[in-house]
Image (cartoon, rainbow, N blue to C red; front, side, top):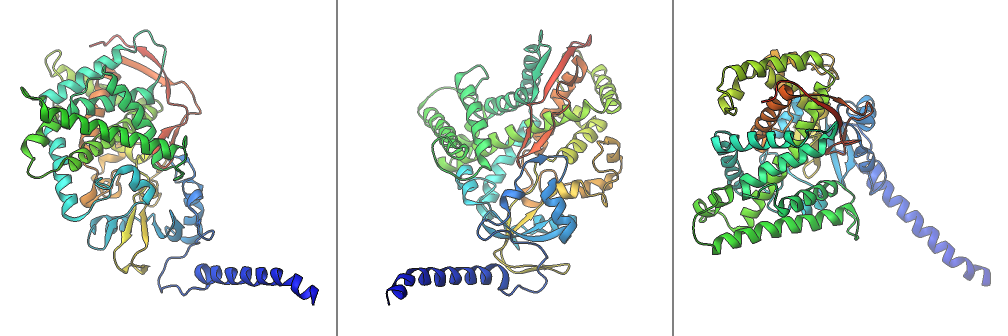
Length: 476
């Protein structure tokens, strides 16, 4: 009898453990799957395959996780990522179908940890009429900026100022310089904050923390990247609110920046929370997208002397057709055909945006694939950009491939549909002006042969993209 009593706790533990195993088996193995569901693996219970999916890799590759899964299951497969059952797509047609059916069959859907950092009114998260309203306001900034002589002159002057600061330097940490330049452009034109102000330096520091925590583990403990990102976002948001309040109280002439425009012309349409969110979205997009593009451009051009030479000749020809000292106009930039090819090829090879998050609003059937309603869907742009069935020698940097206009339908560097990144054109414009001065005034080469762009999944250079630089004689 004593032995029986002694074994009772062990028996209960074994029964409970067996029940848990049976439950997990039912949930992850035995549960009936809908017909047509893509093949794949759901990974570990609860954890899924998220850690493997997010493992950093060269941004000009799809990484070992996708390589293995595409080889085993095809370019559309199921998985369990970010806490959700997921369909991962590396298929061009399915990706386009998902992007073009926003708010009909699919909807933007990001993990709660990402939502907490972006904010509930971020353009990446809101949908329907609210998304349309906020996007329209953001697009008005883009449209006005690219055609504004004042904006173009400011970008031109800041570019010259940045390059003047390199005089006497034999090497620079270019990725850091690119981030400073792009954030300062946006701070000036959104909030009229000058680069030399202490507030500009603080905002730059906060945005560096913001990006590091955006896709980190959601561990809200002091000192973790996620906790630092939440604090950085709170500081940025608070700063913008304080600027709004200060301007509302201040009488006299206006600053003439985008915040003034939102406060004056759209007071009946936007509340302060929406204004703050729009400014934060534009700062985020203008900073991260453009800085990444500028870094990728120099990385690839450093290894492509023929492309660099043709690009230099095109920019020199444009310079000769203009009055000395005149900045580039939007019309000038539109004439730089090879420059456009270089930028587009850089985006295809470098993959600033690896994937986006969507959720199926209902059961969807597409070309034999079944996507259950409520499941997360990840269109992976990198897989399409580096697909050898779509691009000859996809790993090669070849701007001349863009002479074939059909390639435009095979590349989605900034998404598509109603959620196409609103800062796309502005990123290309700023990058072109910066390149215009750089390729005529400097020569450069990579300091570290082992440096390369990494996907975290946001873009970062492993060693900061150190460059050896040398002025040319074509100083202007």
